Length: 227
Image 1 (cartoon, one colour):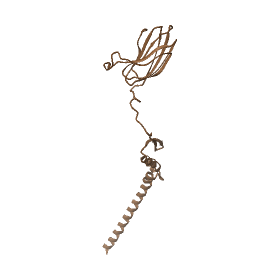
Image 2 (cartoon, helix red, strand yellow):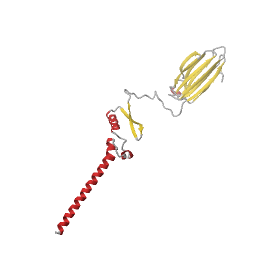
Image 3 (spheres, one colour):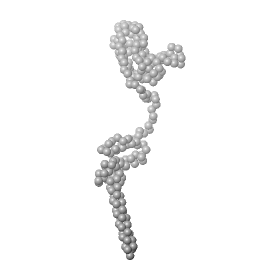
Image 4 (cartoon, helix red, strand yellow):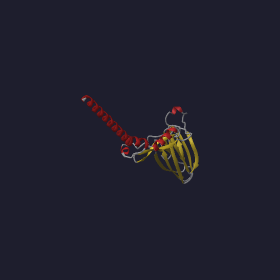
């Protein structure tokens, strides 16, 4: 009789233990649901724990943005806007009919562009040459003005390397004129000296002011009757 009582007591104790374990497990599940799953999946954070744990970053609104971006391959996602602890991706529409530019259109340089200027006064019959030493593909913007009268101008270039690849005494003329000013752009087709020859055909002196800006190695007077 005592054994039966002990058996019943043990069974009741075991049932209570199982019941308590189930209640504890249920309580843990509720806590996880409220503090982790709701903030992470639905953007609801009644306890504030989700915000502390950083689980509010991906809300249904941002999920919608991301899903839309994935569905549309021509839209790129760039994380740019931050609101509190929320990072909101910004969709950037891709350019239609995009074409990649050639190396002719852009040539990045390791150093910044440079500027130079020069002034020279030529008496009647005098001439001078100012040149920029440029690599192939270098570009120079220029502007020059003459005061005292029109002046004969020859814009040309001659190679300084691989001369055996060119005819003897080869040179390239860009422009020839007789005027009081010139403005433009030189893009060097080869490594060499590129610039201006000025000759004063007037009876009176003529002063020339020239400014250049761009990518080149050196600039200055390379010859002339005034040198």
